[in-house]
Image 1 (cartoon, rainbow, N blue to C red):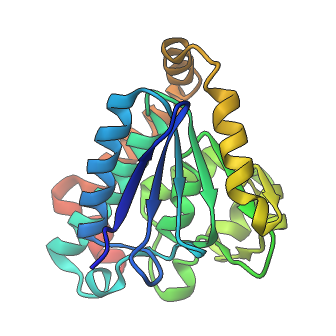
Image 2: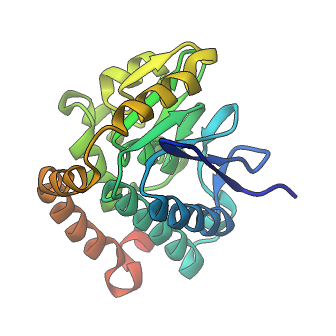
Length: 236
């Protein structure tokens, strides 16, 4: 079995690549591998690029766990929320090379990075929870409010609208969409450009810009996970 997350050190950036050989479902094992790779990347202190497997960035949470409900579901949700917070507060710029479909928690990862490059093509991006019978957690609601275009919130969240890469730029899931063969080239180009920033100043300024958002997320996490997450469990 190949590694779920591989890490490649470069002079000006660190590249993390998720690849489970399938849809890049965010399982317990994937979260463990992701966080271990982030530990290494943070220690390196360079711009971070996160990529997925060709055609599939991430289909979201492991549905075998989500469908079972109970404590395992809540633990997986918490792992996703914690990963979003970690990316939002990461000490260096985070560039996502969104290499294909990004749905549910995969779309929330798009809302958790500093800059998101997608690729043109027949790919789906969005929060499809309502369409598959799930209520979006409060932390997902707050990420959407903070990062999506205000006019798109109702369609994107309440109506589970799924976007193609070009419309995902207008909605706020992506910052730009490039031709498929240019995805990694563009991500590296951006990372090398961002490497000229003063990282301490970047981290401190990002924290100031996102202070209201992080306060809202903290309250959302309290609502999601207080009393063992009974509010979420009751809504699914």
